[in-house]
Amino acid sequence: EPEVTQTPSHQVTQMGQEVILRCVPISNHLYFYWYRQILGQKVEFLVSFYNNEISEKSEIFDDQFSVERPDGSNFTLKIRSTKLEDSAMYFCASSSRGAGDTEAFFGQGTRLTVV
Amino acid sequence: QQPVQSPQAVILREGEDAVINCSSSKALYSVHWYRQKHGEAPVFLMILLKGGEQKGHDKISASFNEKKQQSSLYLTASQLSYSGTYFCGTRGGSNYKLTFGKGTLLTVNP
Image 1 (cartoon, each protein chain N blue to C red):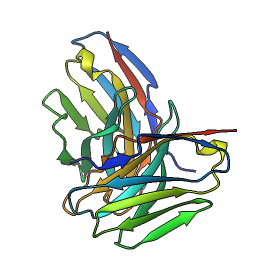
Image 2 (cartoon, rainbow over the protein chains, first blue to last red):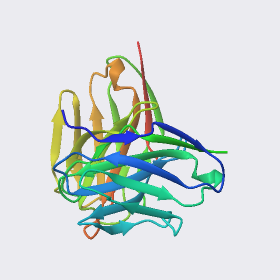
Image 3 (cartoon, helix red, strand yellow):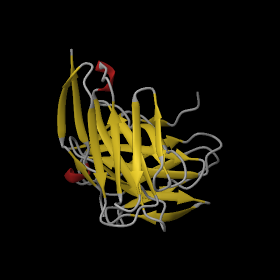
């Protein structure tokens, strides 16, 4: 069964360092998303991406965040200068159409720990 | 604006029923239900697109009252495997993002 895969599963980084979280969406999907979940809290939307550009982003997704689809299969989230409060589980998701019309498939997540 | 879920937590014995509610102050285009087990990714349960729509599979079903901007998830004859946190995700008509509620922690005990 097709699935969204994320790497690494766990990343520890020092405050101020840059991190890149990687995702391989389901191959025929066109819409890609990043969400984050701080431990014990709800899943929060960060950004959606379609047709090689950001279609929507939340207030959380400020200038320190960026997304990229460097090739036909990968979708990355970059955090330029990590802060302690960036520690969270980051989920990538993809869907064949806009999220409102069809289900989004989530990856297993990357647990980011900023120390 | 995030949807409001209730209750925040519920504890059941195996075989009992539960209802989880999700409401929004804004008009909804669709409602998505997900279940997340501890340390795992959210897993899609179902999506409701139209007012009055009801869906279900196995013993989990949901309804969408568009006028009330509310959806309810019904778990019947609960099983141990139903334990987890249930999130509703809602979408208005003009954006792609899903906005999730804070979740309802469901614990099913033997």
